[in-house]
Length: 576
Image: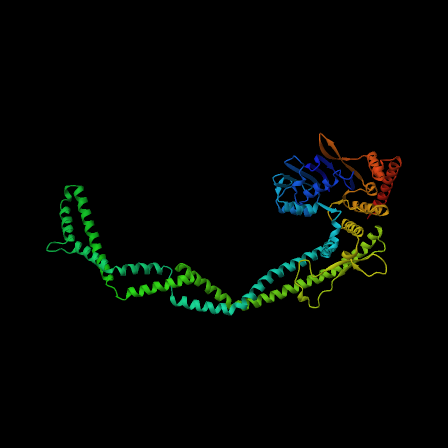
């Protein structure tokens, strides 16, 4: 239940706090006093769309804070635990702020959260039924949702199993559809890849081959220059012209220095360095000879290298910008080709799984249909009793199931099952059942929605139900019947009702008066809880209307309150 509501700078409300109670409470007041503003504030807390027009004129921001008492609510606990929000297991504080700049800040138990989470948890905290919500009954697609809300715990489990079976099937169905589409182009794709792979396999490329061939081509194109330089270098080191070679002179110098090593370390060091130079030059001579031998190449080798490089470039244009990319594409095609070779077997396996999951879904959906028929029969019986209380005793209410096609394969699995239903009514005896959406009047729709809400309150439902002027257009005996229904709901849920009818106001356990006044050139809305005398005067005003409060109206109001308490006491005693 909601314990308190704080509103700051919302339209005509500058600042106020309302402390709510258990049972039934009503908000009353003159038209235009601002009763709807309180409901708008509640809607903000529940995650509805933020309208900057709700911010009080001249203010930069508006805020709403609500404190809820939800002891042992597993759904609320589950959501908060999932989001990592700590709370004491009982109290949930929801806060929302709107700014003129468009910023929207939401907090749950002090933790900043997105509006989507506010909306999710708000749906577990309160249920708001506005004066236009009964229009949802005009949409047959909504009827199945109403029916499923009447389901018991075991039926809800069946709903969950059906949705799970549908999700399992949908996942495989998407894969199966993709494989079937691939099979349609499989032969053509394999033929194309076979051609490409033959070409690449015949080439037998190596990852670093292109760079090696480029280097070899460069050497081959400059072979004469290279040979000349190598020959001159070798001659300069190891071959002398009429004199000793450089190697021989260095060796002789090393021997001479070695004979002087007894004259100091410097002489010894010079001898060692000279010997090292001799051995290094000797190694260079051998290396030059090897390079000269290798440079004596096959004259046709350059042509072969260029042909190979040309092949690599053609494959790069076709399969990738570089040779490693070509080899990567070759590997990818090899893997895809192998997969396509096994695609038929894979498709057959998926097809078997597809049939099994579809059959599993059909079983769950059929069981759900059976359960829904039982729920519908119970709903019809209970709705007839509720409608009788609301002055529609001659109206027949029925839940019509659309017949399933003979070939259920035509039905695509849905998380909600295979059922399509529509609420039907017969307002007058002797007439056929007709679509609720087509023949029900506004007053009938309002009463039928109230009947549904009463049944929801008796079942699971949320702890707090808000009714915003659903009594519009009714009066007299029907107003009393609606009041009786409100009392019934309040036996199971906290009820907050915005009303213009004295019959409903008299049925409340607590009453709040909404009023507005001008102060300092600004209009302000205020809300005050009424004591017994205040209630009598306010209900007397509602009875008297524009004629002012008469003594008779106040006396009648006191009798209405007393009578309502008596009826409620009887209901409490008889309520199981």
